[in-house]
Image 1: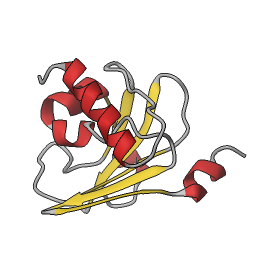
Image 2: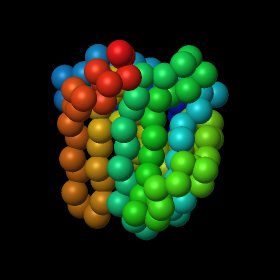
Image 3: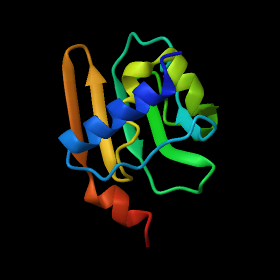
Image 4: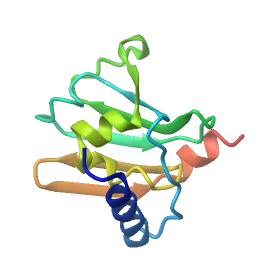
Length: 120
């Protein structure tokens, strides 16, 4: 596993780049993932919702996701750090942020609707 302190430093730099407050993720917090996340061969969409403290708020899905929430898994953030460290660097962005990664494309943006819908 890449040094967790290095991941945190990269997360902070990512937050600065996208003008987000740094909202750290802890190794034992949970991330919701779909099939295809660990394999790494397909584009990944991530969205961070406001969430309870045992969760990161991140939901990571691929095109393999069929829309059935029962097929999703909750995994510890440490597994994302170990298996997909290139995704972990975005996971310090505050709730409301989204990213889409695939091939050479990288799209990161703040979605006001995500942040507000869950605050009400």
